[in-house]
Length: 463
Ligand SMILES: Cc1cc2nc3c(=O)[nH]c(=O)nc-3n(C[C@H](O)[C@H](O)[C@H](O)COP(=O)(O)OP(=O)(O)OC[C@H]3O[C@@H](n4cnc5c(N)ncnc54)[C@H](O)[C@@H]3O)c2cc1C
Image 1 (cartoon, helix red, strand yellow):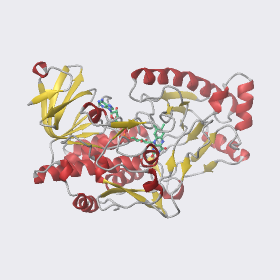
Image 2 (tube, rainbow, N blue to C red):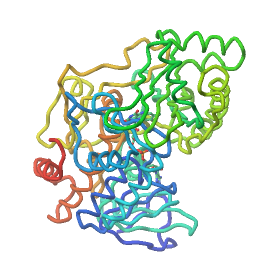
Image 3 (tube, helix red, strand yellow):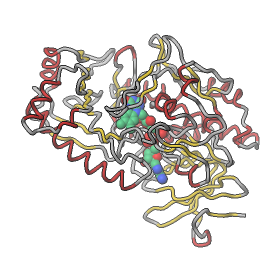
Image 4 (cartoon, rainbow, N blue to C red):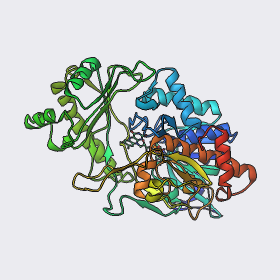
């Protein structure tokens, strides 16, 4: 029997019938689309915005954090293919220690789109997932909403790459959210870009202060590398400048809680800001919170722009290129999966026979200033842990996998694994697992994780 969890099915026209439906064309979902298409599956990626990349391109999170040991990346496969493709056209830079993922978000949008289309997968933009369609205990597709109204997409397999576990949650999968000790989510950020910056003068100024990463060119490319930050009380040499700006009334005290700036490949004269940070009302599944974040974020950005122009040499003529169309959400729902990755397993370097990715990025919780627990905890030098396939398989429902930051893990384990290369790896693994389950006529739960691992390895994963 066909049932919708909350909508009368009769009135909804079937608009598409696919093997693989990917909800969300973000960091994980775009890669799931590429991998699904390459597997020969009739694949459709549904995305609420008009472009791919999600947090990477929409929330302007342009630096990919390194996941590597002795300069050797732990991720391979499509993640590495994309980085190489962008490196080859100088649209991503090789940063410190060989990290390849510092990209121009506009070029990434285009590259992902081309790769999805080249794979044979299809795209449906400006379309929002609304509800899961359940048939005999399995997700059999989704109801979506767009300008044409509601439509039903029937799918043999569905990947929830919404970042927020929207499909899993509507399908009745149990979810967790936030820090179990405080009940709070990690903060949001509303990022922005500043243009018409004289990067050379800015770099000279920062060098004269000390304690900043400034190099004339990033490794193997012509990108000027600048990274600086300011957090009250952490010894950043920009602190006296911030103090002066607060006393002049240009900034407010909390504007100095977290300020971080990078350059990007392919965008000379621009700076990308990993701020402002929003700490209150930070449930990424609450539309009121998201709305408030954009409003407040834009207010603070106006102050930062004024600050940069007045106090930072090289930024006198700078202008606001854009504020991020998407709020940067670090974590929201985490599904209950067949395996729950714990904090101890991350720090202890746990290994699994059904591993789909390897990670050595530290625990990285952006704690409130009053929370004195350590936010960043590294794995032992040279150590990595693995994430098993079972973390993508939701408990209690068939036909569905998740990929991306909403996978099954503790709050702190998620803070480590959520980086972009790992989300991409989850997207690829979920699509390959979907193809294996369809080829063998078995459920996603029954896909042999050891075989999946071998398949991923054949496709270039470093496992
Ligand atoms: C501020 C911030 C800074 C970060 N810094 C770094 C960093 O420096 N380096 C790093 O590697 N990682 C960083 N991360 C982490 C990393 O960027 C994210 O964890 C990762 O990109 C999330 O990928 P995802 O695929 O799970 O979600 P997303 O990339 O957000 O993709 C979800 C997609 O689903 C779409 N969608 C959502 N709901 C629906 C729906 N109902 N219907 C249709 N479409 C929908 C969205 O529009 C989006 O395209 C940062 C994250 C944030 C927020």
